[in-house]
Length: 297
Image 1 (cartoon, one colour):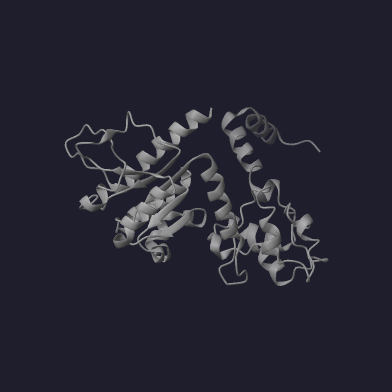
Image 2: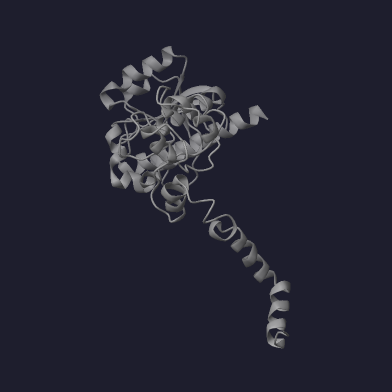
């Protein structure tokens, strides 16, 4: 059958159009057009995790296959999915360690992002296991703890949480761990709290915490403008440090400043000479990470 000339002209145009080719490549990257197979992907992982994720369902609403395996470790003929851990975990029996225990030893070899279910199926869920693994790996290369105990505004704390995770901080110290359950916090943090080690130190306990960190060989660095401050342009961050941020209104109180080893300030060139504490922490953390990256090259 001969196609009408109009169709042939349209096909020729599409094959030669740069815009059409870009759109075609974009379509080829779509999961449902390039990867999805209704027969092969008829399994637990796809139905309860992959498809909800592709539909932009919140990660904590997705249920990973490991939640089901924790209830019934016998893989048997159940179509769990094609995760690389399945081959190893399929040897698990009812008399063997739990899936959570078994997978702990092999999570270091497989960097599979897991979205655990918040409904209590896993007593010690894999998210927490991986969070600790990530913290340990970060500590080996560059150990920086962000101390935000003096900050009380949730948007700033959430922004710091997100920045700390993105730039690979070891831990973030909050004045109250319950803050992470606040909807305003979650809207900004973008689930970064799931992949970052969080600690709670109340403002009244900050001096004791900093002394403990000094005994653990951390160098205590305050971000503050003072007569003894080092310019960020010339300061060299140690491999192991504790970065203290001040409150939005008062900065760092004198009783805390006398506990620090160094003060660092960001050069400013405008009239206001005051940065938001989240922005300040982000700039300092990025510079510290940049220096360590250069040393490792």
